[in-house]
Image 1 (cartoon, rainbow, N blue to C red):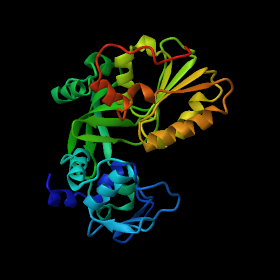
Image 2: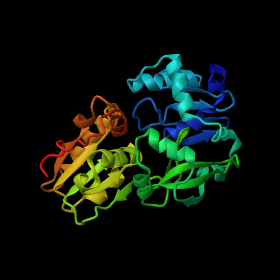
Image 3: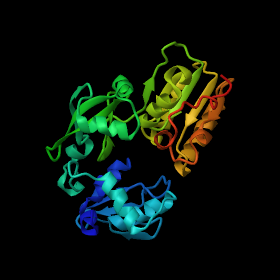
Length: 310
């Protein structure tokens, strides 16, 4: 991907994949909560005709590459232009190009652009190879994932992806070139084989959950599991934990600033629950960013001495 190609990708497409959606649309510009920091009052404007942006809270603006460089810097990642181009290439795909918001009417903005047309057992060779790259066995994947055919309602194009269903019927979608979801967006809950469980595990994404099961073994992992599917969904996990009687909660958040913040918020909630201990699992997969990265890089011999107080 070259610079000109990257700059031509609509800003709303990239922001949607960061779970940022317009709070207001006014003529040829859209207002968002800034992806560069936490804020309650939107201050991030996207100018749809020119595909440029300006963040009034940061006093900064520019094109898509300028945005991605600042986003990577805020995430404490390498943030050179080549780093930004690689990030954009991983986030964008020719199969899923969402037109700029000015071409959508109000009905289209409120509707999810991605719709699952069919779901079946995983058979697509590219998806099987992708699972191999993430070091997830096909037999395990088939227990939790489906091969879904997804249609972009706006472009009319379709693509195949791994689909992980959530508690309200939406899907998390992954393939080698795409990471996204259909609406509604919420958590997924995986019940233990032997309920009621005394342990609850909280993961950011389903690849982390599958990686933990792969590395530690389902029997040893034990307990129920909540997959947030987005850190923004953390409050939706609380009703599944509140007053259930769990004794230990294990959190498997990313080793980054966002993951640390989610761990802190979860810990504050868990303190409101009687006799519920919180164990952060980050040291198990440090210095890797997340569970899957650790799982792919690690020796396949099982690691079983990190879940204490069982």
